[in-house]
Length: 297
Image (cartoon, rainbow, N blue to C red; front, top):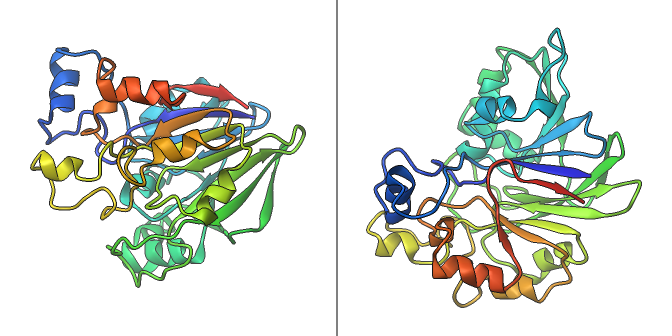
């Protein structure tokens, strides 16, 4: 199985267009070592011929162009087979509208996510005016064969984040995906949004060969201290990397072969290559994703 990180930043990218935080300033003026990043999305394949998108970011067109394996043939046949959504957040779904030229689009999402995209943001109803949408309901705990030697099992990720669109039903608003190469049995977990690493979520991470994990903020009050927001990381639905209950120390104790942080907010100091926070991540044996990173599992 191969994973390609198409975009490694959280919503807004790095730098974010309206942000002058230390990281965004550094990536613009080159004053400290760091690289730009587009918004979070990953492509996965078991054979390098058929690919599946995990979320569709607003940067999806540029991300596809940067990855030749996703380019079409001489006509309009494309190796992109389906899109799997973890939630209905705009930074994970706006790219669906940029895929509207497809004759049909296979979309895997929970009923809660589909309901939000139809009745809340109306994004899915807009997309359906342009192309046929073949919706596959995602049921947490059920094994689903994607074909081409790849399967997934979604798992519920509890969240208390206030719903911006739709009724905000609890179950299925956010899921993670455990992806398995059916020929080798090796698994990878994609979890770009998680509010708490409770026992139920941690159980899904056991023995995976690769974990792509929510790295939105380093500290819970990061954006509050910078004067950029009134909400903490957890208020926004993301467990911080550091501090009490942080992900870095918890994941270091798990039997996970490779942990890679994705969905990195522009305020997160780990985006600066020379930061002490980056060194702390590396001491724990984890990695910080960059756009274009490829992982063979």
